[in-house]
Image (cartoon, rainbow, N blue to C red; front, top):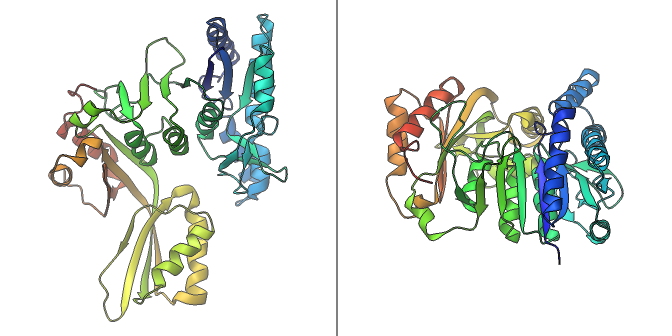
Length: 409
């Protein structure tokens, strides 16, 4: 029985007709090695941004259902062009939208979650000997509405398909050689990591690393899908994302990430009584807004301040939710919105068995004159909110302090 290989190509990999032709050659090479090949592609580089810009010329807050209808068109262009390129070379190929591939999602427009992928149709095409090309980033609700999975959602499409098809590996082709210890554009000495655990990759993705979408890593971890992140412009081995291995804990800190897409909202002067925090965060959850860091200060005269961070693209929506609560329930004195913050994080499963990482991180930032505004931790990550103007300085200092340019992956 032929093994199934899932490959995903990002927007820069299919950004021009010449690059689409190059992807076709790579896909055909894998097909000729004896694999059943499923290819997931993103929209051509810049196309999704163009579609979003068009929508915002019409409306400041476009309807999310119609945004999904609009944004799903980008991937449809790419799948058709890639299918044509493969067919032109004499190989059988068929393109499928998310709807045609039966990628069933929930109804959360613009950030839908995959619920099910019946595989009969996909397997039928593979058994016919065809290369199957699926539009990434998109799906369909049970009632037939087109949905999209959020930015970077093609990664999730690919890993989910690899999971349900029981593929040997999911190759994520991008414009970089793999996962690095930090952004090489900020720290030229950043190194490629050869192997990284799901947990570490999950933290890196959630804390700012742009190589993989966080939900794709969740899928991979839950279903045991091995991911190989590699460049579409060379044949160099990339980074393997896999289960935790014994020697991985030897490296205390695996990487440093940052995110500038953070906004801090502070609700000042809320009554300090049970249920207030629940009211705020239940309302935000009901609006499908993801909250990251949370701080509540010490109560004074029966009042407290609650600060939290949300993604920049959801800040206005969150602000409207909070304003509605203040008007109806909270009676807070003031809402402050700070969009000049960023988050820097250090990640590594070695933190589970080594102490002193937090102290070293805080000392390093202090030595650079960088004030810490908020802190959050997990078992394998420490994050600090800082003023955004210090982001690059903080990343360089932390990368150097933990010796990430010297460690062996």
